[in-house]
Length: 249
Ligand SMILES: Nc1ncnc2c1ncn2[C@@H]1O[C@H](COP(=O)(O)OP(=O)(O)OP(=O)(O)O)[C@@H](O)[C@H]1O
Image (tube, rainbow, N blue to C red; front, side):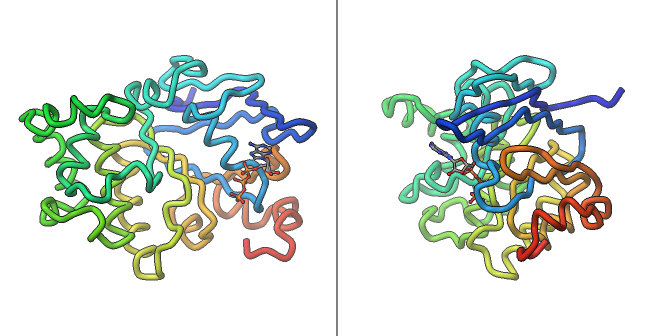
């Protein structure tokens, strides 16, 4: 039996008459990048929302390392080992790179402001933050303001923030968005190495990145997974070609 790090079982979510997630069961295995692709409106964000805890499913469950996390909040899931990245708003633009990573290391989101100054002076939190910045290649930029980083560097900082909580799995929502060709290439190389730390569930429109990175791809159409397989299997699947007619799969 293959070990599963993160899994959904029969996730279902409706908005009025629209079934945005229809009985979705997917899993993420050790060391892999599992990409979720699908046309606009297919239900990718809705699925990610339920996996990360910002949306409650109508039915079905989410498990992380065999633990049912369906009713946990986003913060509780983060502390249980779910590393969600690329919510740009989660970074404090006026704070430095090191401050952002240190606050991340205390799982700071949602905590009262008065704890922040204590966190910044905490040596062990700071050491974890510095190790994470080293890992993502931002150690030389730690005194820079987040606002002064390039888009690609902000993506790396978001990964560093997630890394400070020692995630068991990453969930990444369109990390390539807004990056130029060079930035995408760099981030692709970085994510390729990151899968060894924790497997990655990757929602991404950039097909070059998906085909370069994914061990498995699941294709979502009208709220349903119509196919899961290797890059080659998905590229040659007639249902996938049909779903993408007129799009660039
Ligand atoms: N809060 C909501 N209320 C009503 N309908 C919603 C809501 N959120 C999403 N939807 C609908 O659910 C469907 C799936 O949307 P979702 O954003 O999950 O798709 P997506 O695959 O992430 O799209 P994109 O690639 O454009 O980001 C769409 O038809 C969308 O209009």
